[in-house]
Image 1 (cartoon, rainbow, N blue to C red):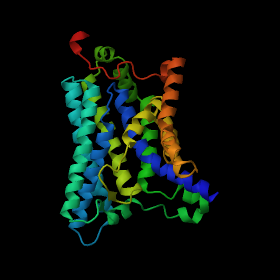
Image 2: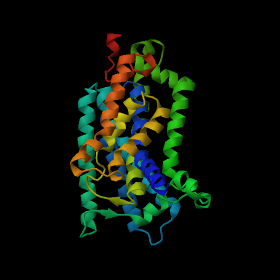
Image 3: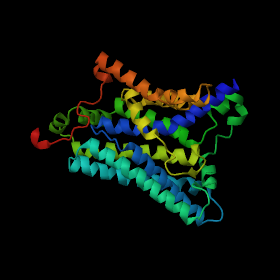
Length: 326
């Protein structure tokens, strides 16, 4: 049972950054924008939070828990928002190709993170190729006080930092807004048929900007969580791996539903670390690491074959809106 609890716990921690990224991308895609820059935005959100945390830790003798959380959080939000607005300007205002722009944002985000991460490591004149912000990370990893009194159940479900629960709350709120509110209805209308939405008096560009910006900020928080909580405040260049791409894959797995993204993220989190918990020859490990992508392909095939409207991506996904063609 101890082995099972540990596996579930690690899966939840591994799946949390994926949940942030997937929720952000679902909001974005519901507006009709396909943002393949999510991996880069998550990277920028992570390094922006690291920069904020670094300067705070360097300029204080006693780390205040509230400020230790607030400063990296605001820095992460600001960094990911700026990069997302660049994407919005290019794809919504200038109507650039969304696929190319997204890939460019990802390349830029990874380069931006590695450059400033490497620069901070050089500032410290460290002998190791990583940056440690353990005091700041302690603030992010504070757990619920009653968790340890609840035995194994408490450790498995209530012994995480606040950002794990925040990711779930954001996904649930997103699901409710999308399905139960006028705002969600209008946003989905923009993603399905921007011309019809425009004719109905909905400001298409404003909704695209708003949804994509909010989605980018949420995705950026996934990068911040990965560094400050999952990695215990350790930044190393290229340490984020392919998690950003997995977050995009989860959007398909969850058939564009934020509530299903919660389950999908933790399933992918479990598959991502599965090779650490089973005994197989080294030659088979790459096959096991492919499982999240194989599952995504299978779900895509099933969804495409069933052709149910509610399980399909927004009709205008990835297409720039030209009002003159209405």
